[in-house]
Amino acid sequence: MTGNHKNRTITRRRALAVTGGTVAAGGIAVAGYQSAFADTVTEAEATASASTGSSCMTLMSSVTEGPYYLDGALVRKDITEGKSGVPLTLRLTVVDATDGCTPVPGAAVEIWHCDAWGYYSGYTTANPGGSAPAESEDGSTANDSTYLRGYQIANANGVVKFETIFPGWYTPRTCHIHLKVHTGGQKEDGTYEGGKVNYTGQLFFADDIAEEIFTLEPYARHSGSYTRLDDDMVYDGGGASSGLLTLQPVKKADPSKGYKGFLTIGVDPDAENTGAGGGGGGEGGTPPGDAPTGAPPSETPSASASS
Image (cartoon, rainbow, N blue to C red; front, side):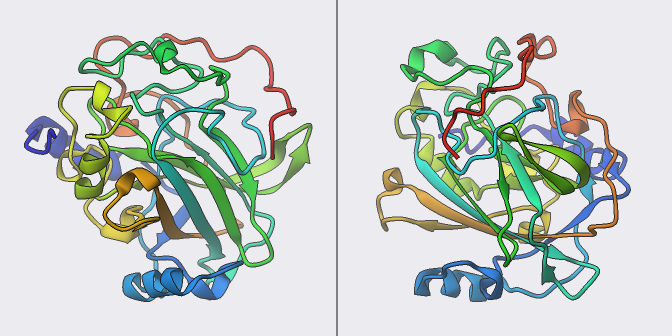
């Protein structure tokens, strides 16, 4: 669709984004999905694990959280709130990279990402670039301060699972999902309180899969220049070690049926990631023009949403 878009300025800034823009202490992303730590593993998922590798090794450092973080996300498996898009099931495994990749039960994995047209909940007036319909035109009943945000608590095998949609894109970023790994806190009033952040990072998608999905509805209604992985200011080209998800189609030759995504994330449970949020450039990028103008919600989201 827009695969020929090349932004060399962003490419040059990428080194800054993953070195000067990184946070010193934090987590270590570990390549591949480790079937040994899965709660339920199908034969196809085990094959995906074997193809990507499951060795525990030190890889990328944490990166800053970007401009669209909000406190108070709900603890829940399904974060879609009726937002339309290609279904995406994420299965992430949290392991202790300082102790032989043993599982980290009780770790809280928090994710957030944009909708099919590039809008983030809580910042819905921010322009995603290109030509996109108004966020309100998607016909969903989603709460504009909570959709596509949530926590899950790792089970005894360090595994969390989210049901969401494939993210869209916004200028000047490639398709991505933000995440944090927390330890030491607890679920309270429907969200996660206390503890510390061990890792802040981003998950990425192969260009060929993303670009095929962006030809489908509702994504196709957002036109413009999509930034490929090679030109992204945060992704450093390291594959799974840099957050690139292993993706499996739910139904071969029909991307509209959705994907399953896998990755293992190694953390140091004793480390604390103290990076501040927001900002543009190497910290995650903002849409063209001004910084996000949407006001964060004034109250903690209701705990009434499904878990």
